Amino acid sequence: MSANLTPQYHAAVDKLRRARTIEEKEAALLEMHALIPKHKATEKLQADIKKRLSRLKDEAKKKKPAKGFDPFAVEREGAGQIVLAGYPNSGKSALVGSLTRAKVKVTEYPYATALPVSGMMPYKDTYVQLVDTPPATVEAIPPGLTGTYKAADALLIVVDLSTPECLDQLEGIMRLLEEREVIDLSEEGEIAASQPFIIAATKIDLPESENNLQVLRELWPQLAFKPVSSRGAGLDELRKELFDILGVIRIYGKATGRDPDKERPFILREGSTVLDFAGTVHKDFPKKLKSAQVWGSSRFDGQAVAHDYVLEDGDVVELQV
Ligand SMILES: Nc1nc2c(ncn2[C@@H]2O[C@H](COP(=O)(O)OP(=O)(O)O)[C@@H](O)[C@H]2O)c(=O)[nH]1
Ligand SMILES: [Mg+2]
Image (cartoon, rainbow, N blue to C red; front, side, top):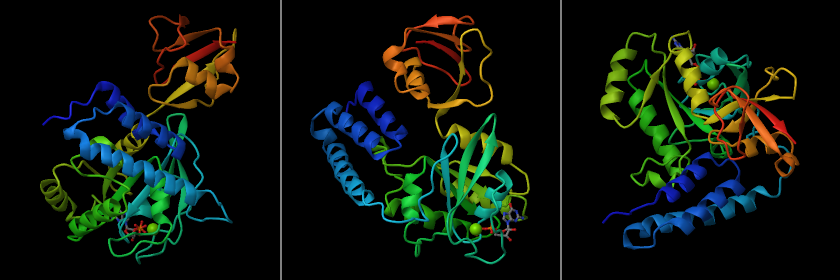
């Protein structure tokens, strides 16, 4: 029996995927619940949505009493936050060290990283926040680290290609993340319980790595592996992947009669409209907005566009309020 999910339902799932706060997630799930066709084939999905809603409520309750300092809570900065996840010695700290200027500890012995450490990766004219973390294995994970994973916009899962243990590392980390309901590899991917993730297969510069990469690809054909070395190979491709997975666009503001402010872009979600942009610039602007002009994705420069015009990465926008 087919579930016959509508485009509107899929749009709500997409909203859930992009949701960053508990409130946004709840709104998207409620929308999914309202839009899902109510029949036998979708019963499991309906139950999943309800389960997620009730879990969100629990999460919200737990979050409220923000007592004291939580070293596992990393404040989001830049275009988005990506948290690393992987076994001891897999190369997490070395990767963050190569991509950012963060002072991370890279050591030959495991468990050198005890708490999350944040660094900013320059990309185009913005920054992506990378968070180095203590190791997690299927047997042991520091309390609090699951929360760091869940709060991220995406995960960078790291496996060490240079060792035959890479297969155990991959299986272990995937199982851990599934058990903790951070990611969802099940067929019902529609529910989007999942954090978006990238898998960095590190230490590609070492002798056994190419062979091990083939093995991983054969055994896990459903996953995409990005071979990298913190010494250089594959880092540029990884930078692009890390930005792209955030699903954001950079928009530049322009005041009437002036050049656009190209120093610092506003970061908006993909699919954002002129009205969304106005709200980002100032909370009163959506109400006041009279007209807007766009340079970039519009048919011609300075074209007057409707409030619901969908912006693209790199657009310059002038608002008349
Ligand atoms: N050859 C090579 N060695 C690496 C690479 N990445 C990390 N290492 C080494 O692997 C060890 C563990 O790295 P580290 O980043 O501390 O691992 P973590 O425990 O996951 O943070 C260190 O000795 C690093 O120098 C790499 O891409 N190539
Ligand atoms: Mg480390």
